[in-house]
Image (cartoon, rainbow, N blue to C red):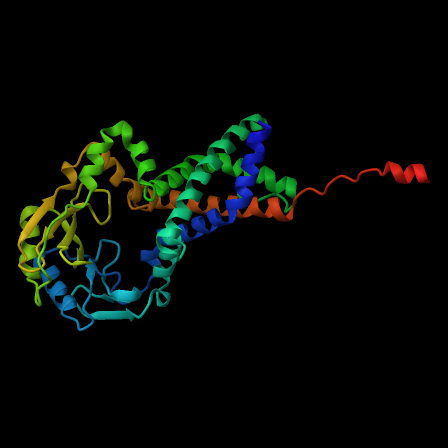
Length: 361
């Protein structure tokens, strides 16, 4: 038990600040649709084919040559177009531009998202966050085990009674046990999105992980070069014909030679906010190359698709989002206080008697 206590303290001391920052930025992102505050952001979502088609054609005809569109959603009434080097714009659902930016630093929701998901370091940052997630998982489990010894002294406080080391440690212990279920949910779902082997281990009870991996893999379609004027109206119409109840979520142009145009949709039963129902079109001719029905995917794959909405508070409405807000605040407090007590409020070493001095005296 002493070894576990030592490992728990060192884990908190070494990764506590990172976990605190992830908890803080995650909490902010939970409510980003409410604080972006741009004109027309509160407009009701239009899902009819004609409105989406007109907006798509207007945005994709812009001289900046967008790489894709994230369509308006129920909680945010603007389309987002993406360009290279982090540039982009928001347009209303008629296709009129309401805001532009040359890089992500001009939009707080973008750079906060980049930090929370990549630590401003791309794939390398994702690995760091994934390792921190695994350490956080150990942090939660070991904390519960260590709390059990002192359970009879439990006294819940949202804030330490005093800013002394003993009071902060008691607060850390008791806040941690209260928040443990939500923290476990946040850490597990967040790590699932980064480390696929970990995710497959989590969803294994729901079905074959091999079938899940195959179902989630991007098909290797051979597409012609992007046409000068792709027929987006025909593509959107075909997608609506295939999935009449689904809403349009993300249109993406080819990233490399031979890649198709992809269109993601969300069916009503899907939890994932951008859906996993996907269609691929030949970039040269607009011909449908293939389609994937997210609701027909294996059970393990569908379980994996629920990780992000559970992590980001995209299901359950405001009540669940508030629960995840409490989880984020708790992680911020636990991580920051763990670092404070470990590095700046460590107990002073006891004074040792110097026998040699006594003898010489």
